[in-house]
Image (cartoon, rainbow, N blue to C red; front, side):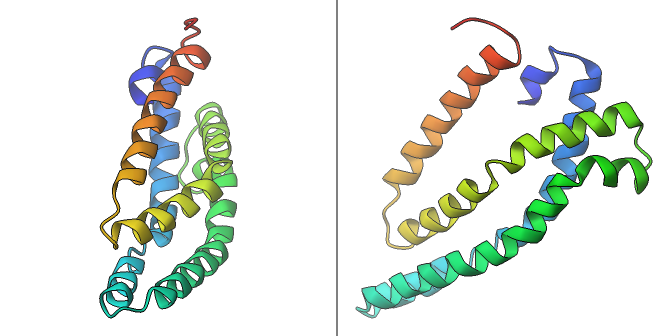
Length: 151
């Protein structure tokens, strides 16, 4: 994203940087990465239903933790301007960038939990395929919607 935004303007790149700093700092609570320990333990002891229970528990906990993170992301512009002293124009752009990113937060959270669940069982192909496809889609959408290049 930053490679594409650098071609738009310096201000867009700065705004994305501020937005990424804030969203990454607040999203860290969603990256517990403990699910794989419980799932691999359950699968290794021959209790796959317990592994499924751990996945469901992780999804519920992640959904609860998602709410304050989503609120933080939607308040990015206000926080950057009033707490960190970022200019109004840059904080507005950063807020917009974070709010668009916030729309994907529920899907990203579920993907992270499912990916960890599968990886703990040694099933890595689905995660790899989804991440590869998402990277290609991100590039294509960036070329079209950020740079305006028809594909």
